[in-house]
Length: 407
Image 1 (cartoon, rainbow, N blue to C red):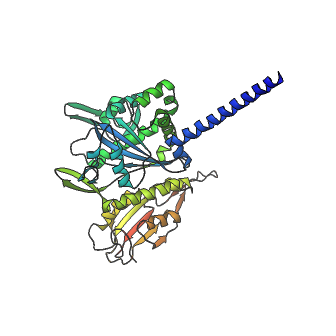
Image 2 (cartoon, helix red, strand yellow; image 1 turned 45 degrees about the vertical axis):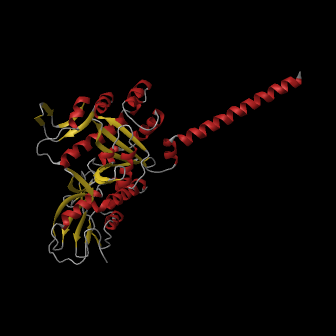
Image 3 (cartoon, helix red, strand yellow; image 1 turned 135 degrees about the vertical axis):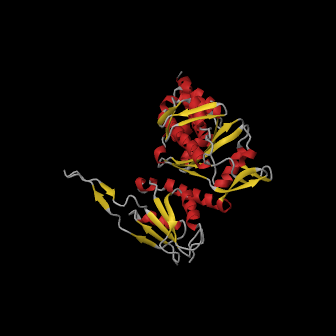
C-alpha cells in the first residue's frame, strides 16, 4: 500500500516538473519568436514604418523612431516621390514604383537603404480605414491657422480656423486636399500635423483601444506582418511616447524630372539624410537633461563670403538636422576667413554639437542675458532678454566648402 502511495507521489511530482518545463519552453519560444519582445529586450531604438495607402498606392509614408527607455521619439517623413535607382525594378524611378499592397517588403527595403536603418515593424492603413480609425478614437485634433472655404473638383472644402476636432470624413479630406497655388511644403506640413496628432490621439485612447471588442475592430483596420498581440504591444509602447516633444523631419533633396515625372533626389546622394538619422538616433538615446535634448534651438545664418546663395543652402542643411533657422542673410562683410559660431544659448555642450555638424571648432560663447520678471514678492521668473535673437549665429567664412569647415 505504501509503495502505491510512493509511486503516486512520484508520478505527481514528475507531472509537475514536466508541466513547469513545458511552460518554460513555451515562454522562451514566445520570447524568441515575438519581435516586439526581442526589440524591447535589446534596449534599442525601435523603427516602425507607417504607410497611408490610397487606391493601392502609398500616399504618405513615415518612419517613427522611438527609444522606450527615454520615451523620446522622432519621425521622418519620406515622400513617395523620392527618386533613385530602384534595385527591384532596375531603373531610376520613385520609391512608390516598387510598392505592392500585398507585399510591402520591397518598399520597406528601399526606405531602409535610404535612411540607413533597419525597420522592425510596418503598419499600413488605407485612407478609407484611416477615416474609420479616426471615428473609432473619437476624432483627431489639429490646428488650422486660417479658415479654408474652397470648391475643388465639385467638392466643398470647409474648415474653420483654430483648434478643430476632425471626424473620419473630415480627416480624409484634410490630409488629401491641395489648394491652388499652395506650396508642397505647406501640403506636407498639414499631413505631418495630422499624423503627429493621430499618434497623440492613439496614446490618449490607448486604454479604450485595449477593450477586447474595440481592439479587434481597431486591428482589423490596419495591415501588418505581425499578429494582433505584437501589434497591441507595439501600440502600447507608442502610447508611452511624449509626442509633443517629438520632432518630425522631411527627407529633402533636389527635384528633377525623369521620364515625365518629378522625382526628389536626396542631397549628397543620400549621405546627408543618413547622417541626419544617425544624429537623431544619438539624441534619442542620450540620457542627459531632457529639457535641453528636446529643445529646438534657433539659428541665424550669415554669409561672410562672396559665394551667392551659400547661406540659403546651409540653412537647408541645418533644417534637415532639425534646427529652426529663423534668419538668413549676409554678414557685415564678405571676406571672413574663418567660419564662426556665436553661442547665446548658454548650453555650451549643445553649441559644440551644433558645430560638430559642419566640423567647426571656432565658437564664441556669449553669456545670455536674462530679465527678471519677479512679481516683487520674492518670486522670480526669468526670460531670455535677447529672445528675439537666435540661440546660435553662424557666420560662414572662406574655410567653409558648403558642407564642412576645412582646416
